[in-house]
Image 1 (cartoon, rainbow, N blue to C red):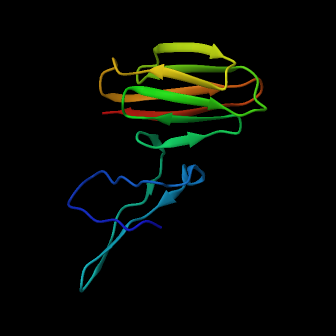
Image 2: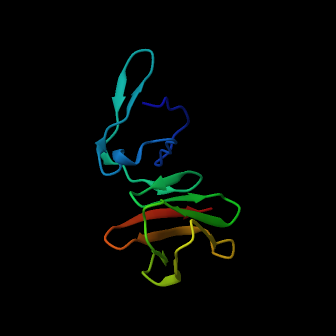
Length: 131
């Protein structure tokens, strides 16, 4: 488990957490020299920001320079993607068959979005934080 340091906050950011941890519940233990203080129980959710996520059929990387790079696995057929805002509006969508596809998101406002990827028989959705 990663070591955490910081100040008072309601948000805890962890990096390099395996995607298999998403959906699990956790409790943060904070200790000082005398006592241990436990946080409330919370559920871990994965946000795609400066990291990446992998599905069986594709990988996606947010490069923080205004692009999402989607790379499909060799065995995957056509990939469909949709970029959806927090209100459920589809902002961008396309289908591609090349090994790599780049989606420009530099013009979007800061906020939370959802990246949906679909292959012939599989799909996945991940949160995307643009800040």
